[in-house]
Image 1 (cartoon, rainbow, N blue to C red):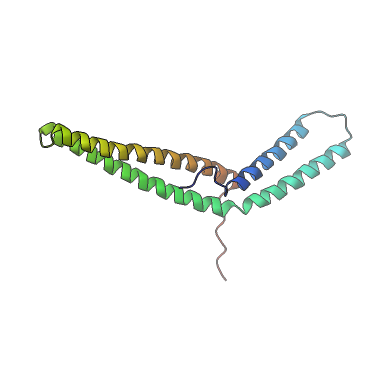
Image 2 (cartoon, rainbow, N blue to C red):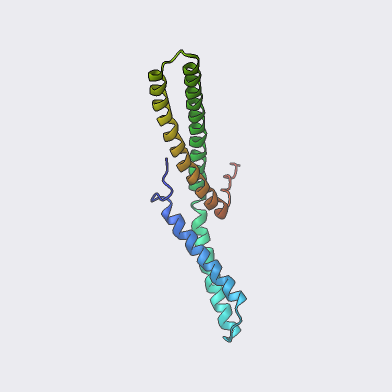
Length: 153
């Protein structure tokens, strides 16, 4: 699974931070009264806008990669959810077998320890994957969905 702070995402994080900084500066420039001449304000605005457009273009280059990673993580989450449900069912079945007397206490404890450990490990991994999905989902929302390639003529 992908780690949310993997090296492949660091450039995106830096670009998003840079983009947010330009947006903040532009908003402050608009909201604050100033005694500087309007020509200076416009020059600063044009500089921030140019830099914002450049970083936005760099971010667009990452859209497809983010979308593909998000798709992989969503598939991994579905697989983990299925594995978790199956393990929980095995544990419930073993509990019923213990309750009716088919499994003695030692058998029940062995199954409970083994399957319980599997359930806990799966839940932990699923939590990490969901966290990564949330993070990449936010990044994808900021970048916009990747555009499908144009069909060949």
